[in-house]
Image (tube, rainbow, N blue to C red; front, side, top):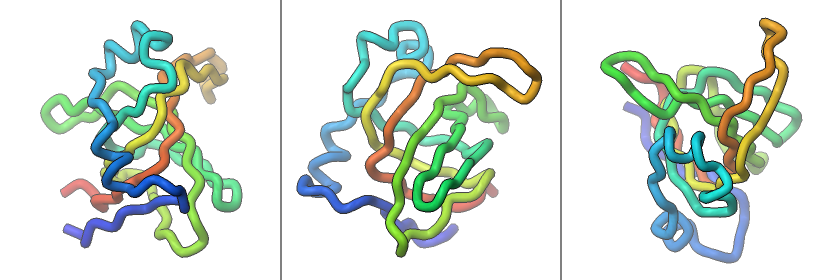
Length: 131
């Protein structure tokens, strides 16, 4: 297992204070009642299934529910990393802390419309590849 490194952008509040205030909201609760949790601090652990990088801005699709050896239940994550932070890669296991933004809708590669919960991550811990 890799050494765990906290990835974060510079903010006034300490990472410990921020992460301690985050709630673990079950995926189905967040997906079914997104407005009830909008702008709440949340935390999720999951597997990165897709990422898009534009400079230091990273968009991730992260599956946050593990059922035996399969990860399901996708959230859309926005993250701004600093120049010195390690990159997050597909299949990395991460823990993130951020703010629930409601729902995010996009067109999939299969030409269908997909709507999933969205989180603006402030801190991410990268646990490396799942073994």
